[in-house]
Image (cartoon, rainbow, N blue to C red; front, side, top):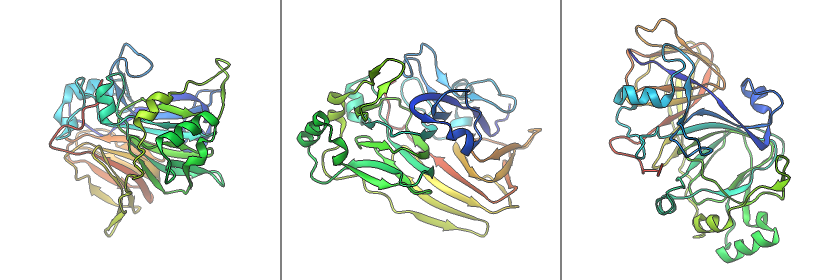
Length: 349
């Protein structure tokens, strides 16, 4: 069977800080009466990583002849036809990216994720570096990212105890179109009123250091903090990860803006003019996250085109027969590509 552009059924995750903007802004059909904080668009987790599941938690394909199959089962069957030169990660051969939308009705907890060194020493934990692209925000909303100059482990630990954590974290005004790279070890929190697309290494390991004294209605207790673990992971060097400069490549019908380059993925924003029909030129897997517009993707010997509209995420396999894109309107999407020719850093699974 020839491969074709794959779309997936989102996995909606209820969160204490979540809301309903995914329904209004991205036309997601959310479960009734739930505050949804996350829509997992493309994901692939081995047993035991997510909610102690005994089975794979892997995205279900929603279109074409492979509809109903999981990403993991299709990757296992098609191998390099799907992966190309990109190596799966970990002993379970996990797909190397997780794509989400996040809706923060309230501030997320102040948190940090483990780096490779911590994850290697603690097999139950998993490396996580991520990027946020701001889709929408309320007036005055903020992104909390990194420690203020002069903050040491000792001062930060004291701030956790006395409740002054926010005094030590940089607050950045949210702006539509901004992209924030958050490498592992960065203290951060998504501020209330911000809607983002998130691209990250496939990990669900989060260490909370402050949760704004919230009470979880389901338990009547504050949510668990992970202070000792977080203090081992936070980057206290005073040297933040440099933000790579944006680069632009413009053609007659398209503009490509480089947003993030890191060891795990490259993230770019692509603008394509209306009415263009062009070959899709890749021989590696590529993920598109549609921000605005409408397009059709066609593949030789596939009876129906794949429709893309705002809020859709699609995986383009490495091998497709004469794939083409036709833009029905002006389109903007985020494009995720991967390092090739070698395995990514192995995330314990």
